[in-house]
Length: 281
Image (cartoon, rainbow, N blue to C red; front, side, top):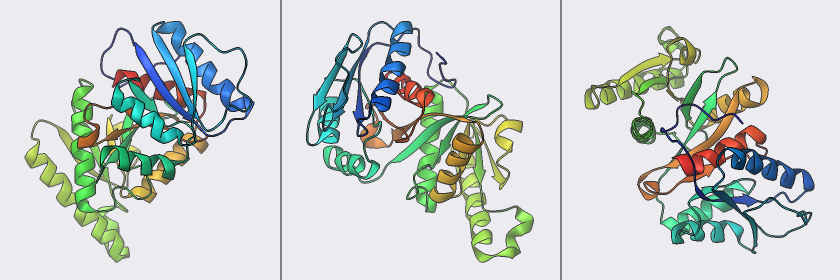
């Protein structure tokens, strides 16, 4: 089993992971059980609670320390169990994103949040990345919040932040469109503001040079906006032979809660990575 890089130091993992399941075909169950079995072989004291609307195709024989909780509102029950301490970490799994977010807002009185994803390039370079939601990071203040949350996250992982901020073009491209000029100007201002506020970190305006994530050994990359970020994520993971290990929900309401997002079509590595994040972070 591959343990993702850039995590807080830990010797072992222990506790209950809760995961949501919407796709109840036999292949989906098999993928979840395979991820859990791989993880439990290395960390024997972990357990898994599965939250779903039904138990169609749920196998009669399951791994030890696995329970199924059937409910008409699995996302609500999943998050309530986290609040109660019944489980120690949450993985959204294949629950619909819109339903999960609505429950999240209701259960934790959320007004704003961001998700920061742990990715790995095809060459093996790991980095945290945001925004990944199409409606995230679309204002100056939202991008500033994401960067500040990334600094907290990186320091929690015992890493000195090395941040690259992306814009919608190179500086020399500014006259090619007002939206390009605005993106460049806004993000240059943002980089300067963050550098003044956090003098002990490294932060640079990488313009449109995403490749700097590898050449400059960045450990966090900020995309220009949510749509760009979502496209970068999908291109890297689904077309570019990169890897995703889940995205952690960040923000004041989640300070002491471990809630991990995944793609509904996440592969085995993403599910395993998200389970690790749900306990390690």
